[in-house]
Amino acid sequence: MSLFSGIGGLDLAAEAAGFCPLDPDLDRAAYPLSSTGAADTLLQRVTSRGGEVTVWLGDSANAAGLGTFLSAAEAADDRCLAMTETVS
Image 1 (cartoon, rainbow, N blue to C red):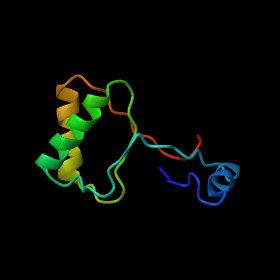
Image 2: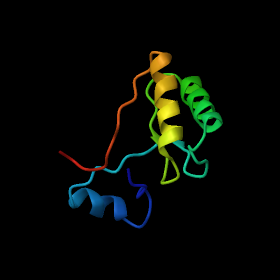
Image 3: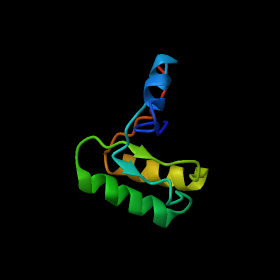
Image 4: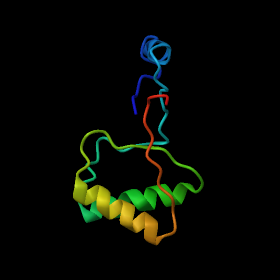
């Protein structure tokens, strides 16, 4: 996912190049998803919003944190879908 929105027309240029810029509901890039505690916090934030929620993780997530989050979401009968900014 790319955060181009509102940056001097970059969102329009990205769309013209075949990208589909996404607008996250939660920007968690400043909070590394790298532990069980971080995964629990993220799940609480997501479930408290109800309905569909898009989350920007940035580049600080690791396999352990992401795996814990996905396992907890699955156990709560939530669905997690991967999103990318490219149009297929």
